[in-house]
Image 1 (cartoon, rainbow, N blue to C red):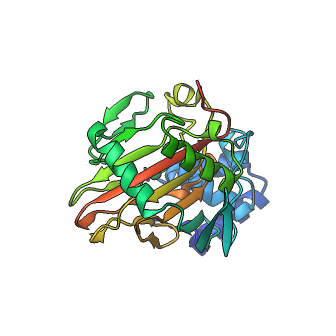
Image 2 (image 1 turned 135 degrees about the horizontal axis):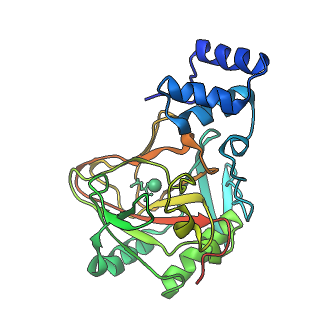
Length: 277
Ligand SMILES: O=C(O)CCC(=O)C(=O)O
Ligand SMILES: [Fe+2]
């Protein structure tokens, strides 16, 4: 896999020389495509080499609505709760958060979700939900503010990140059994896909994700960020927060295979605008 952090020096030189010679970034991207580069990857590389905002190359404005406040080490306040920020990465923007949920809250979320689990779906390029072999876990969605427990957790996340609860999608609980995983993907919606309008009609683009670990798998099951060479350990009550712009390929991440025991998570995706219908 190509790493955005280690662009080959020859490629960097070629991008600089080509633009200095007067060629437009569109031309550079077209040439890279002809040489076999993935267009999304090329946009990231060119933006990084030329120090341009990614939005300048995607033709799409960056999400214009509310942006979350990335929690700052060592402690972040979340509605009276002191959450420990135990690791921070700048590119991609990642924060590891310890002590976000109590053991009791984790257990209750699992028990309330368990009877409602169904095979998790993904959204296809047309914006339709589909069963997907890349995602073999089972999941369910809670409605916003559906119970006092859900309300309390949503209020905590809103205070922690400075984003109103209305900008969140309903909390999703996922269960992975032995061997199950969620292969590398982005959480932002791709504007070049035909289903983009449909999935962003309510709330606009996704701008950040929080994956909360509801148990500690016996082995495996961390969240991997291959461009950062980072694996966040799945630890009961901890969470990983990550934020991204549309087209940000550095935010690639995966639910790594559970190699012992099982894994339960609750994911909250945040939108740039209110998602409430
Ligand atoms: O299972 C994980 O650790 C990651 C889950 C995830 O990426 C998602 O729900 O979007
Ligand atoms: Fe994800």
